[in-house]
Length: 90
Image 1 (tube, rainbow, N blue to C red):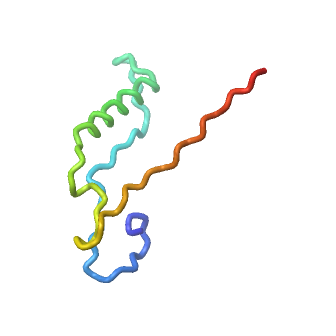
Image 2: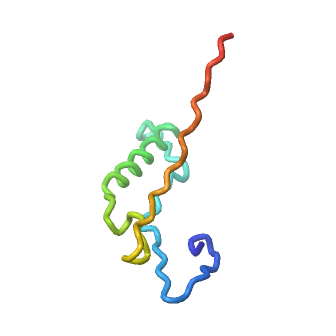
Image 3: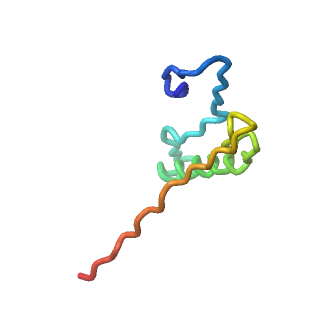
């Protein structure tokens, strides 16, 4: 809630974890000198973003956990499987 600017209805002290990095592909990186099209410029940036993500590892602090040691850990949310499209013969 706090990350989108909403009031957090909680008693103090409140710990609100924040992002360590924000990685984005914004703009146009085409270059005649480097023989880069708009598409290849975006691909180069995405590769750099993926490399940065590979360097970041999950630590126990980043995993979901219970706010109280006496409570069981919270489950990791998972999305339901997507339906498989059925092909229809023409």
